[in-house]
Image (cartoon, rainbow, N blue to C red; front, top):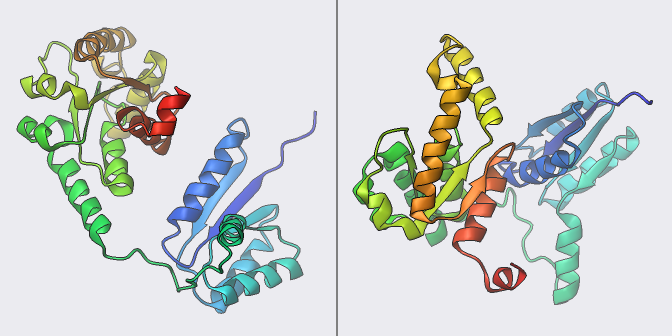
Length: 280
């Protein structure tokens, strides 16, 4: 049996690096069974001197791979040239799609702006408003505000409700509230008044047990706390299942799912596109 190679993937961007990071991590997740893949984001690369320093470091970090999303032609060309000279594999993450769109439209990409920073348009301010909404209505605060929510997430503690709310706000401009389902605590009446907006987040008991145990260790609390007791977890989850069934809402299993995967599934369930409906 051959020994698994270690690999470090460096993503370079002349802006925030969010696109490069999303695409790189999506590719890495295809190799979940391989533990020796390391990811290093390098955003805000805007000068050739920075590329020189990076190439020098990468030359001593083999095996490695460069993935980039530069929008400035001069930076693209310089990086490609330096990588070739040092025999470093390099991938332009956006070029194939950009060139295909260009060919289909019969036009060249009209913009090669430095950084391609988001414009402060209406969509931008909607996202800011959505983030503020998620913070205000986090963890069951202000149930009356659920009336203005686009989505309401429900689930037991540690099912990634808060980070999923923030992701949906930042990436989809969705106003998302979340309400924890706590054993023997009745949910607010507003939850049932707006149950058409609800999505339940479920998780396998053994996965939740591991997450809660790790959480207790991080906080320096005893591992035998009822919070991480496996039997107590099953009782909590049975109670949550009954509430979710009463709400009649769709459910997403978040076990071993990345936040972006969970968010995409939630959007599909709450706002299916016409083609999506046909594919169900």
